[in-house]
Length: 99
Image (cartoon, rainbow, N blue to C red; front, top):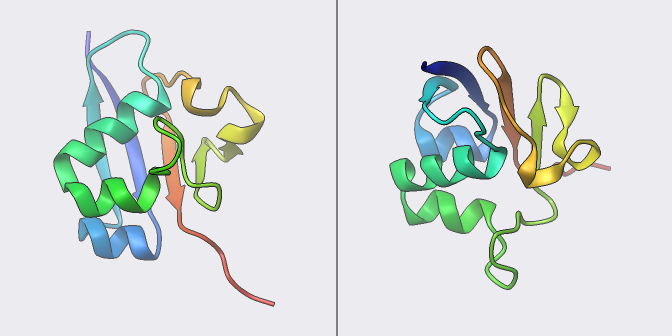
């Protein structure tokens, strides 16, 4: 059975993807945030991949990137192992600057 999640892109991610949001169908029952990010990297290429993943630590996000599932930071959940389910909303946010 297919599940559908909504991915929302903010700031630089909008520029990289050309979209504000997209729907993604997921096939596996035990899909994680890492699976979704890898699928997005395959779809949008090396610029997306290089922007989001830490080259010095394989399989980890750059520390300044925030990923939220239904409004909760994955840092407070199971990080990249956070499981997603049908209907979830995933927000990907770039580094926030300000003062």
